[in-house]
Every structure is written in C-alpha cells, then in structure tokens.
Image (cartoon, rainbow, N blue to C red):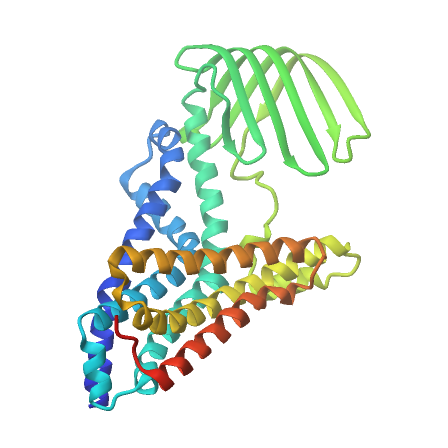
Length: 366
C-alpha cells in the first residue's frame, strides 16, 4: 500500500512540476535572449554557437526556476487530490499526513540536490564561460561594423556611440567611448573620425581614432588627466580584457577564501559571506517550500487552478523578497550573513505547523 501511495503522489506531482520547470525556463530564457538577438544575429552566430549559449544561460535560471517548479508541482497536485475528493478517500483508508509526507520529502530532496548542484557548481561555471562567450560574439559583431546613433554596450562597462557611419559601419564620425571596466580607472574618448580594422574572424578588433581627446578618471574621482591626440589606436580584445572573476563565478571554497583574505575591508568580507550563505540557503529553501506546498494544497484544494497558481507564486515571491532584503542588509553589514537563513526558518516553522494541523484535523472540506 505504501508503494502504491508513493506512485500515486509522484504521478500527480510529476506533470505540473515538469510543466512548470520547462515553461518557466523557456519564458526566462526568452527574456534573456531578446536583448541579445540583434548583436548575435549581426555577428553571424551559427546554430551550434546559439545552442551553446542557451546551455550556458540555463543554469543561471535554474536557481530560481527549480524552487518555484517544485512548489507549484506539489501544490497543484495536492489541490487536485483534495478538490476531487481523493484526499478524503485516502484519509478514510487510514492514510494520514505522515504517510503522505514521505513521498513529498523524496521529491523535495531531489529538487534540493538539483538546486544545490546548480548553485555550487553549474552556476559559477556557466557564468564564467558565458561571459567569455558573449564577449567573443560581441567582438565579432564589432568587427562587422558599429550601428549609427546607437549606444552600444558589447560588455559591461564599455559603451560606444557613433554619430554617423559609412562603409557598413566601419568608417566612423563623431565617436564617443566610455570604458569603466576597471574599477580603479575609467576612460572617456571623444574623436571626430575613426575606422574599424578587424583581424581574421573578428578575433582582433582595433579602432583607429583621429583628432580627439582622452579623459582618464581615477576610481576615487579625485584625479583626472586630459590627453589630446591626432591619432589613437584602441584595441578591443573584449574576451581577453574582461574584468576579474566576480562573486557569481566563484565556488564555495573560493568565496570563503576571499572573505577571509587578510587586509579585506568589512564591506568586501560581508559581500563574499553573503554570496556564500545565499548559495546554500536557496537550495534548502527549495526543500522547505516544497514541504510547505503539500499542506497548502490540501487546505486550499477548493481554490481552483488560478487560485493555486496565485497561492504558489505569492508564497514564493514572499520568500524570495525576504532573501533579497536579507541579502541587502547583510552586504551592508546591518545584519550578519547568517540572517539569510531566516526565511528558511520562518517558512519551515509554517510547514511544520500546517503538517501538524493536518494530523489533528484531516483535510478541510469545502
């Protein structure tokens, strides 16, 4: 009987869980790709390269999609069982919440494992590789020419604007460039004319600028140098000159190492510790939200599909806002980084209370 119960619950959960997983991933992926479509198509990206980009982006979405899908799958499954009277039949057969909690916990453990693998391994690797890949694609796009009167940002911190272009965007007039990829120093360049010179396959891109000025500004904004030039060569090796690894590209061990590095400022330590605890807290939150979803589905079984979606998304939104709010406070040093575990504690207590309520009262009939 126990194995039949497991099969029943897993079958009910699998359809809404997988549907939520694939649908939300597709929607978020589309939102990520739309801003990149124009430069990607302009760079002549191949179908294989486009597929590789999708593979690199997906892990960055799973950190949010997995907990939502786990919660929605379990919530909608138990709402259907409760709405169609099957939950009453299970209770009448002597099957209580304790027996139902076991198959739910197994699903939540699987979702926790997927979320943990994503946050600790796949996420940092994909962020590091996708940054280099997008830089290479954008460099190929620049090699083919710069669009006219468009503020182009091929990578974070670099902005290029041309008032007029000719020869397919390779001859430029009225050029403005801002390069703030290095925190300690930023550059602003104004030039009357310029040309783009590209190497084979766009691997090397050089801007030959003429008749302009270069302004160099210190990171603390206390020092500024102004240089006038007749000719200036600007190498745009985007993939080679990307800034150092960010927190999102580091593993757990590297985050702790950076947080404990001698000579760190308090703000730097707080940022790395916050990222470390967030990487572990969100996978645990996946388990907690999944265990909370089952009693919510039983108690609100009469709410219907739209009501279930609203309950699930509202609960996850409340959880995620608490994570973001706690993360902001922890990064500023107002609270310790361990405060990121508070949403898990809060929602975990709610889940335990609801399971206990079901054990005492059984499903509520509407």
